[in-house]
Length: 121
Image (cartoon, rainbow, N blue to C red; front, side):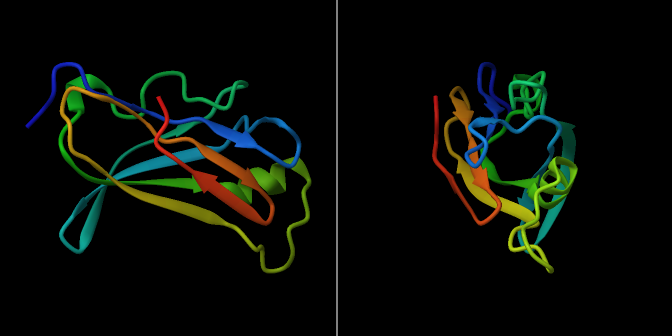
């Protein structure tokens, strides 16, 4: 079921540099049993955010989702050596949306050797 007011946003901060992670590809999937369906892929802007909600109100639905952050390609573009093979490459965050009329914000704080997330506002 689709919500009238719910939507999903994300934000990526590079904690090693203390700046937004601009130019990172973020892909959103909806999980269906054992599989997943790609909904969209976006790149973060200069503020580390996508230019619009990654899941807008018109497509927002209760369910289980996964955001996949292409941290490895971002770090490579920054000239950051994080080892061979990289310690972090694709960072998946799996989460549930249970309220059709809420704003869900799933940020990522990342450095070459660690990351964290939380449900933001």
